[in-house]
Every structure is written in structure tokens, then in C-alpha cells.
Length: 250
Length: 60
Image 1: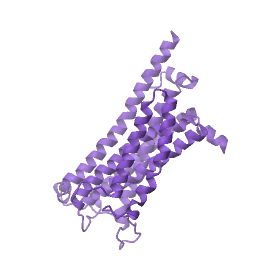
Image 2: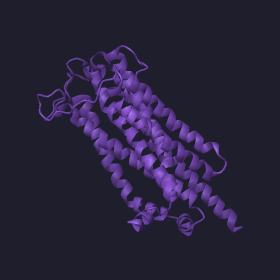
Image 3: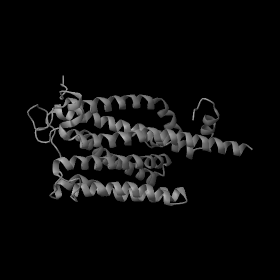
Image 4: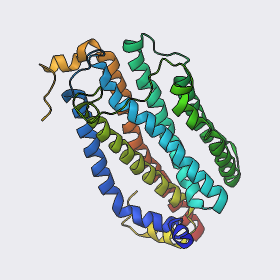
């Protein structure tokens, strides 16, 4: 098991494996996103109370879950970097931050644009919204802290520690709608029959968009990590060979 | 098969009167996604140029 982990931590192996995998992931991602978004925007019946503005949910919910998922993954990478000193884990964590911040910001912006027609306000300091805003600040703080150090190693260590401390926010976000009386609704229960409050006709597109956004995250993460690998492994023989060959386009 | 829920294109674009909110949310989404499609490519060009320049400098 340890050998497997060690092998997976090799930047060269990661680079070689993702070269063939990336185009396929990208194709599947765009297919899922287009199907889910067209379906959600045009082919789901309007909500009996909210009318058509509930269509914002098809990006709002996957973005919110995604932002938390990205944070959890970034924290695992930070832990791997701290415990086993795996350099690749740090490069992945570095690439996670910008994507996580984007997902989190989009969750807040789309939620705000949904709040105005349904709640009558763009923003309220309720526990769910506030804890999500803190998550955005944590993402930004991690990026800022990393770039504040002259030494890259010190920056990585500081960012890893802050990432692990920030994990405390994840259960707070998740349980905020249970622990406190919030304007934000609790988790919706997805029904399996057409008679339930959330029938499959309504949530199926969100499933496609959700998978599409997971795919989008991983393809963007892989592209960013490959850049980081080229930069950080520039003294290694395989990168030098790769860059000397004419086939590699800019 | 799911049916298209709007009578016309104008009806679709107006989103039952919530066009600003729905299309606003989707516009923010689209712009952010496009940025994350373009940005890694720009970063890659920059990195390759930088590393190639350093390799040339080291050879001299």
C-alpha cells in the first residue's frame, strides 16, 4: 500500500497518466454540463411557488456542495503533505484553492440572486450564508498566506496548517440549518416517486450538472497541477527532455 | 420524454419575469467557467516559456 502511495506521489507518473486521460474527461464533462443545464433551464416544469427562478438551483446547489467537497479534498492533500511530505499533494492543494474559491463565490452569488425574488433580500446574516462567506474568506486567506512567504517551502507549510484549521468550518456549514434557526432551508429530501415533493423529474438535471461540475473541477485541477509540475520539476531530466522535444507546444 | 416548458423564445428568455435573476446567475457561472478554461492554458504557455528560457541560459 505504501509503495502504491509513493508511486502515485511521483509527479512524472501523474503527468504521464493525465496526458491521455485529460481529453476524455473534458469531453464527458462538457456533455454532462450541457445536458444538465439545457434540461434544467428549459425542460423541467416551473415550481408552483417559485415559478422559474428555482432554475438557479441547478447551479447553486452543485456549486455549494462542490465548494465544500473541494475544501475537504484540499485538506486531505494538506494532511498528506504535512504527514508524508508528498510534494505532489502540495501542488494539488495549491491548484485546489483558486477553484474552490470560485465555486464558493458562485454559490454565494447565485444564492444571492435567488434570494431576492424568493426571500425579498439579496443577503441576510443567517448562519448558513455567513458560514459559507467564511469559507470563501478561508480559501482566499490560504492563497494569500501561501504567496506572502518568500520561501516556497515555508509558504506551503503555513498554507497546509491553515487549511487543516479551516476544516472546522465544514461541519458548521453543514449543520448550520439544523443548529440555528435560519432563513435558508434545510437539506431537501430527494423523492423517488413522481408524487413526492422533489420528484426525479426535478432533481435529475441537478445530478447531471453536479457530475459535470465534479468533472470540470478535476479537469481544471489536472491542467493546473500539470503546470505546477512542469515549473517545480524543471531541473529534472524528464521535464528537460519533454521541453526540448519539438512536439510539446506552448 | 421531458417537454420544453416555454411557449416561445421570448417566453423562455423572460423566465416568468425573473429573467434578471436567472440569467444573471447563469451569466456569472458562464464567465467563471470560461475563465477557468482559458487561465490554465495561459499559465501553461507562461511556464513552458520560462522553463525553456532557463534551460537556454543554463546551457550557455
